[in-house]
Length: 336
Ligand code: WQD
Image (cartoon, rainbow, N blue to C red):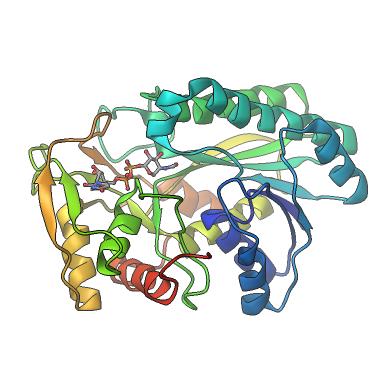
């Protein structure tokens, strides 16, 4: 299938692009490089031998999106493009709502006009808000604690309503947990702008000597060692879930939601210790106060994806720690 990847030059999009090519699909990337880099396409070509077609556009712009759909006959769309910094979304809510919602509406309008039926959406476990219990199951209550999360949940609702109104539409909502790791080649990886918000890129930048020490945000949570527990999933496993999702979307109509996690939670200190053990490195850290908005524990019940998509995570924590460092150590300044 010819698959449009919006935000396809990003961390998850680029890894998904590689796995789509490996599975015999034809990805096309639309990216404005707002939070990614053209170099990524060179790396994808290096890994796969394929020069992926690129549209350097803003997917909120109806004219550019329409021209792209006019030229390409897409079989499916995977919508990664979006602003994704939780803290920033609290400071700039209108920018987040405008960008993250408009892009979805623009794509849906183009899909309806050009008869494209399959839509996979990059959602997030953040839509569960503060979970009443873990592991998280797809049918559990949702509710968000920040504008970024609300844009994900609103997009889920928009897509669900669009599929209910248009019988041609097949929508798959993938709720990601915490993607980390990198392609085994070390040629693709996570390249955050500025000081990383997320745990693993912060750890790898401490290991690379770019940052002095890790701050552990709270050790007084009701967890086994007091630090926050999350469901970390290797980005290549997450990428492979998208290949399964577009194949599944092509077989049915309506909307389906899947948790994409490993089903196992690890604490911050367990991640730090695993990273040090696997890579034989020391990561200096200090305990700091809790980060506003953080929850104690969040991990997936991933059985629905296993049973219906035929997907489950295959890489373990050691793989995630090894591949994260392999990327950072070979790309001290990311793609720059
Ligand atoms: C993980 C754990 C922190 C940094 C966020 C978004 C979510 C998704 C993934 C987009 C927590 C602790 C972190 C640090 C720390 N993004 N931590 N020191 O917050 O679970 O999820 O990223 O979809 O929507 O909310 O990920 O990596 O920021 O934090 O102690 O310097 O690491 O407290 O327990 P999070 P994270």
